[in-house]
Length: 336
Figure 1: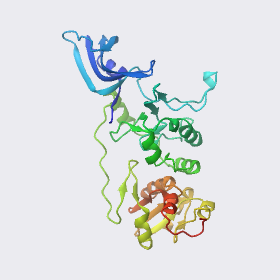
Figure 2 (figure 1 turned 90 degrees about the vertical axis):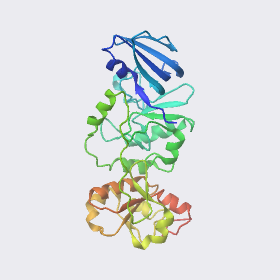
Figure 3 (figure 1 turned 30 degrees about the vertical axis):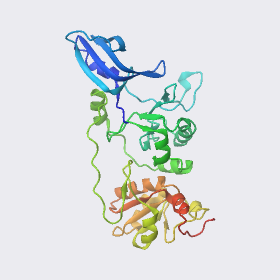
Figure 4 (figure 1 turned 180 degrees about the vertical axis):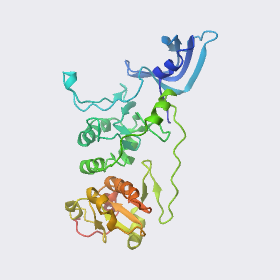
């Protein structure tokens, strides 16, 4: 049940030229009451809200905007509302963000903190990967698993997820991902300054209506791969255990992890994520590469770095060494 969240303020602004506009809302969120109401009508006259209520009579000649199959969020021009990290009584000294949660804890508007199978960047605007990780784990993930999550962005046409889904499937913030994995992943994104404003602004002018979903990348044929929501090709441990000699296994953990309790896959080459870009020339571009880390988070980013370096056949080991060990596949080193 994917509900589309529309920025009502923008809808009203776009309808300001009409004398009277009536907006039919399937559900209307009331931020003050912390609840939502069904079958609401919003009347806008000369760009101002004049009435809101269930099944209000619509004046003759009014322009009608039918959003009866959608959820409407009033009063916010942009949903850049993030999880509260810190709060002090002197506002100008604060570094904090907010996630808005309904009183019944059925919906949370997470801004850029938790996205659908991802999270916001922490490499600008006073970002801090460690603080984001702890805040999500201690706050957002304390909500019920069936609490719906509505993020500020998604460029694939998706609109909502749930706390339970993100705990299980978020490649950056899933429950199996450790703080060190997350921080290492976020500090090695290697992304340019955001270039999505040309897409975000027109979308906002259309009240957040998503465009067509991004086309799936061409399916590689060297292994049975799965394309994740995060845009990463992954393979399962069973295939790798049977075909390890046919690929290059690149473990992107640090040396103490490689030789630590989880051990490492036989034949794996240690190339820490932070050194991968500089050492990519050591790898054979003709042989498929499987990247590995503790949980699959850092190694997912490694596939992005290798793609940028010109390697075509690259995949991430789903679940990392945690899943490999859980399935009792052999390792070198490590402890039982």
